[in-house]
Length: 315
Ligand SMILES: [Zn+2]
Image (cartoon, rainbow, N blue to C red; front, side, top):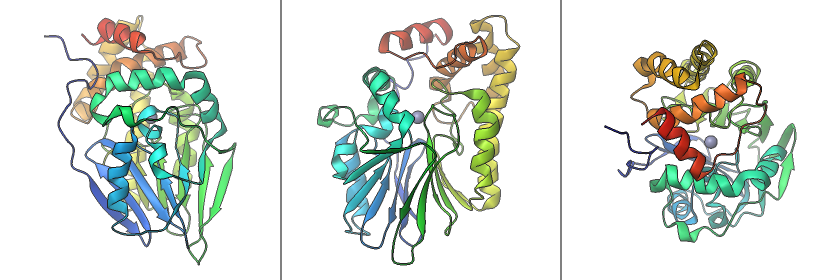
């Protein structure tokens, strides 16, 4: 029987949990749906990630407002993917911050990515008509961007760690509390999406830099919060292992179809039951095949190309 396209048949509501990770540091996790967060400054808030639509974002903000009524000064977006950024208008933030590459990627492929992700994961696009358009950052940086939280709360450091899940991922790091919002550079018991990735950089230097921060609490892009150094190391290790297995299996294959089958066989015992595994794998293998055959930058996913790759590999 043919598998339903991507996550188009995944319509079950996920339970959202708000966790307080340190004084004024919040994460909302959702059983494998995209995670979001917030950090309190002395008299302002920094929000991390915007969800797929303003309506979805407003539900998150209503929960956050049970804890703080400070105005939102910064909205930080870890990368350009639609399910992370298109809810931005709900935040009314003074400043929207991304890495400089993310701005370029939004200009180059934001519209196509929107159409692609909407077809792949329709459930996440709650009331899609509430989206006002593409989200444009109002501040960007190349290496790091520091926000002084004020009132003895320390800094929030936005850091570029190299190419990984996309060409322009940032992480948000609280050095005093040792809390890291890693975006999709690290997943904790959720499958990786690597369709726009740079696998070799990600599996080596980029994850090395993430690990070197020394987080004690890590909020990945999806999945549960990793609490404690062992759990943080396990989440980073899982992410690296997933990539390493993909690199080995795709690298040993003669065709993209063989690459998909080998990779599926090698990853499924450990990761097959984790959220979005089946959804992601055809897109992941397609991109890695390109990467290993000299295609430097990921090709743009469109709704049409998504279907082609799916039909070729997963059906
Ligand atoms: Zn992503």
